[in-house]
Image (cartoon, rainbow, N blue to C red; front, side, top):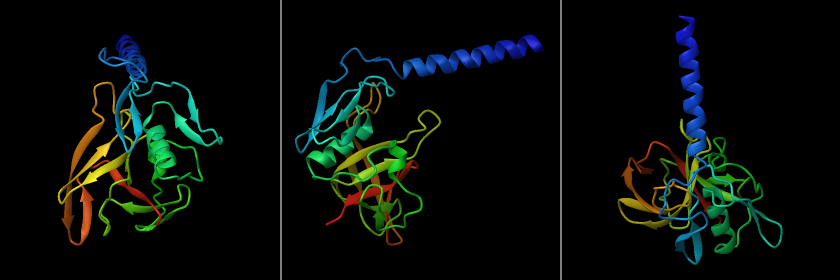
Length: 196
């Protein structure tokens, strides 16, 4: 029995170590880390390789922390900084930290200086909104992207670091029921919008 426990524990540790290694390695030979993949309003989406790859910190000329190259957070903060001239008061945190569970729908998220909407809001998502995904068993940090287009029944997002084989653009179904808008993905926490 003890031998089986040791073998099982060894296999579990080995599997975890391989999983962590794979998340740091570029498995897609078609792209190089830092390669230009896409853009929205002149702000470039770069390829990151493994989702945990760290290519150093991106800091603006005025010393604003944009984020770790080429993570999802770095893209959305760079987009808001370059295209919308917006600096977040809390310049740090993982993607999942962008959504504050203590902020009510339609109220100000003070850490981001953005209006926060819950998934299931009276306010329909709009282009340029940030959309926040919760963490998962494989990614406790969550994910964040920019809404690039909205129609009657879907949104399109643009994202950086969706994984080595992920796409920079993705469409997600949008539903309106009982006077509320829902983005049909169980991991969507909500969206954030720059104040007018």
